[in-house]
Length: 151
Image (cartoon, rainbow, N blue to C red; front, side, top):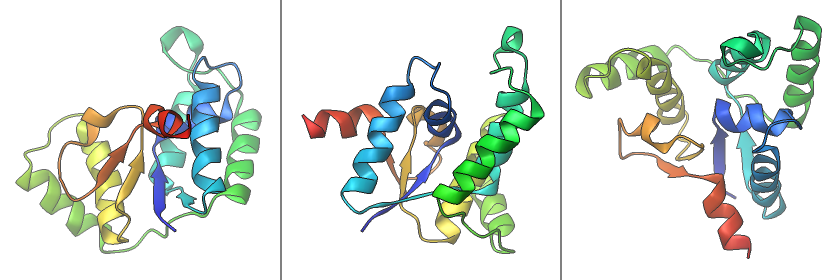
């Protein structure tokens, strides 16, 4: 069994049947689960999901209500294990952003990597592989790669 952290962009599409990439995200997660792998969430991903889900469509959000977003998050938390927040994440993040000279928005992605490194999770399912080029210690997997391997 391999453990995969699900990136926010995959989780958003997985939860939103109106998204053009919903099926891609759903098929990729289903494929991992069917072969016995574990799909995990972290608090950062849930927080980022809340930001995008509740942001208006006009500014690149999903436009969901607070109630709809909370219901979706509750369903996710019932379906996927949540990685524990721990005191080791911050020093790992700080070392990572300093060593890799991470600046700006990529800082959030570096924290996701720090969570993974802290908990020994080596695989990330994401639609944006370039966002996580801060280390070679994790394996980036795109949903399209999993779908291709199914065929």
